[in-house]
Length: 244
Length: 244
DNA sequence: CGCTGTATTGATAAATATCAACCTCAGTGG
DNA sequence: CCACTGAGGTTGATATTTATCAATACAGCG
Image (cartoon, rainbow over the protein chains, first blue to last red):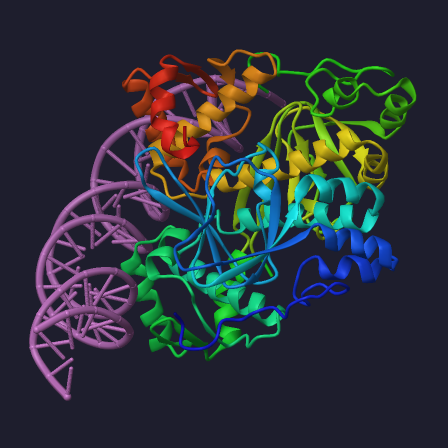
């Protein structure tokens, strides 16, 4: 799919989580004993791989588990009654999908693999029960949920195509950086149409903004490979979206 | 402020929550005994009134409590580095504000009263602790948080001015209806500029769409009073946003 | 009454979408 | 090995939506 290997979280084992996983810090940081650790591990089920285009879940399916992306990229989207697709988000290794399904007890959107995806699936009912006894886990869940409210609101604002594109690139840069990958050089795993749809732009506009950014020396784009040449300048453009 | 009295939730007492409050159902539905009920009540602090334009909290302030709106309307918004305001949402009686602050332990946005607002404030740390022993409360919190992720994503999509305005009116209609008020006749408590900003439109566009809807017989608008004349037709226009 | 802030209306401008053509690359199969 | 093919991407010309600017209306209030 992409010219360089996809970022992949290192696999966990019986006593360690995958290092990039959102849940990895819970036990250790809180100083839980081995039995609590093991209990949490019991909830984890490694699933996949899902291949490019395969669905992880579909809108309306009963919800029973959230999942941390272990490798690959997941796209979530909905389709309106007229069949128009609306991309809701992209999820990289270490990020959690399915949190928006708790409310209705069924998935409110579709989730599809953009490349080869593996997941760590956690039974949500069991996790909630365990969270009763593990304040740290409960706190983590509250935080993850709260964080997603903010994320969803980020790009909802009224910003120009340039501002949204810059913010898009910066968030990916940072999300890769957190997981130990280069913040200035990465491969976008999604098509231009997906980026466009996510940012409420036409695919042609995405092309044009990429070109403009390249002509201005901000980035270098080759197919889906992106190199950020002037991170500071790009951040400056994204400032109003990211509010810094 | 508005020509008719604002919707107000009936006050709770030591043993009952305000009837429209999101938290009212927790105890009774779960069959908790009086002591648990009293514990939850101990967390509640009635605050306000806040008057039109007064801030309930401001961006960056330390977070320690979520609050259910008891009366009035709260607007949340952020301002970007250039000083441009971005309205994030409006909160009616029974709805909960502050959920997006858990993540960073400080409020990520401003909250301001649009009319006379009273709140029931709940200490979040205490609530989280109590939720350890009350599965129903934990579940409610998870649900409220999850729900807000979806709400934030609703209007983030790429829809026309008409579609967004229709969806805006329909959601208010339904939210009032849930609280026992007329779904077809209500007063908008916010200015046109706020509606416009929230929907990523110019205030002039809001005026024009209102006029068009009125000319088409969908609604009747007089200042901030709205009457929905053809609910079905309006819902039809909002369908793609609400996905029904 | 006249002021002030909010809302409406009309004319024009700007941003972005749409349409159409073309390019490029990775497969694919002769 | 190489032409064919098709999906994804780019580019240019034009259309459309919505914003912006400017003027006016209108209610609320001292």
